Amino acid sequence: MADVFSLALFEREGRTLMVRRKEDKPPFAGRWLLPGVIVKSEQSAEEALERHTVRELGVEIEEHVFVETLSLDDETTHRRYVANVFRVLRHRGDLRFRAEGDYADARWLSKEQLADAQAPASLRDWLRGERETAAPAGPVPLPAGGPTPDNRQAWNTIAKAYQERYQLPTDKLVYGPRCPDEEQLNLVGDVSGLHAIVLGCGGGQDCIVLAKQGAQVTGIDLSDEQITFGRRLAEREETQVTLLQGNIEELKGIDDESQDLALSLHALNYVERAERVFAEAYRVLRPESPFVFSVHHPFDACLEDGPPYGVVKGYWESERDWQWDFAEARASARMRSWYRPVGEWVSLLTEAGFRVERLLEPPPTEGPATPWDESYSIDKMRQVPANLIIRAVKP
Ligand SMILES: C[S@@+](CC[C@H](N)C(=O)[O-])C[C@H]1O[C@@H](n2cnc3c(N)ncnc32)[C@H](O)[C@@H]1O
Image 1 (cartoon, rainbow, N blue to C red):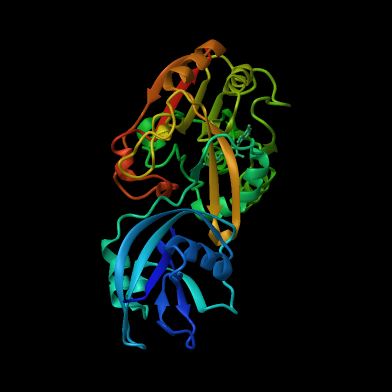
Image 2: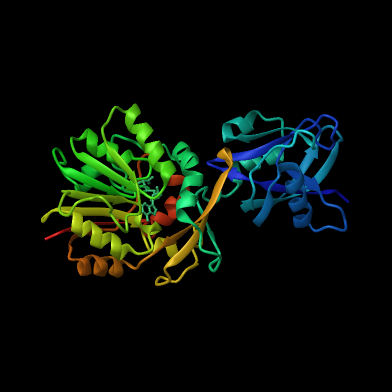
């Protein structure tokens, strides 16, 4: 009977984690393979793999799914092996390579690099071609009911990795993944000479965009690390912006009726009491000034990220926790988001005194990729909107 391998498929931004087995570690000595182990008769395929990844890579597999059985021919031992491949959906710990273990090397390989890798042909061909699309590399939903995460701490932990991965532009506003841009939407308009406040400004990119167009901009963010990143970025871009650490539920130090525009792009889902943000935005805006914001669409947040997009959260259930893993930077954090039905966003705005002028649920742009795309499936976005965008005005 052929020996059976269990192989772990770790994926990140279109790349696959491959390991090269040591020259003195048959089978597949010196060859590139997915991390994996031969299953002994007393073990289950999953148990064997879980132990192996803890020992060799320092990670605990928390969720996996079987994806394929392959036959692998080893040219060095002239034997054939059966390999069950498990896709790792969630893991705990930072992937690290242990030089004293089975492997001589470990790398994230792109499809092009896989073509040249000395790997069993059937595995290489499957990885390069037939395998179904990888699970999104963005945050992974966690089961409800855990302890309340500290969002400020979480954003501080992932800020650097987030900025390195997503590389948001400083020359145009990004309303969300695969969203039409400001030129097409015309929600903010000409900002030259205006006072603008950006709520949940992250790494300051939106502030810099507005400042480059002649606005005087204040950005507020909960995360000290995001603010530090933003200040450095503004300096590098030779742009004047004021970036302050703070909770946007309370706009401390911002005078009543001092702003001509409030903007918030994909930040309000992280705020528990959105009604407080709306009250504060209303307070600091001058009459006839707009408040433009985008959020993760509440319908999208109810559905699984992969086909068949089953319901994982009730539409009116507000809380959802996420695990962000940036293996490349060894950063991971758990954070909480709050979702509201579309009607509730509108009610909260009108209760705060705003007039809702536009409410958009755009289908995805089909052109070149935009930041965060890897966290969303375009197939899913073609069926339900991923973004909700609202322009409200203080009368
Ligand atoms: C996805 S980012 C949005 C910024 C930018 N548009 C981007 O996409 O990077 C979310 C930001 O909201 C901030 N945030 C979360 N809760 C907040 C709160 N209560 N007050 C201020 N900022 C908050 C986080 O620190 C994070 O930087």
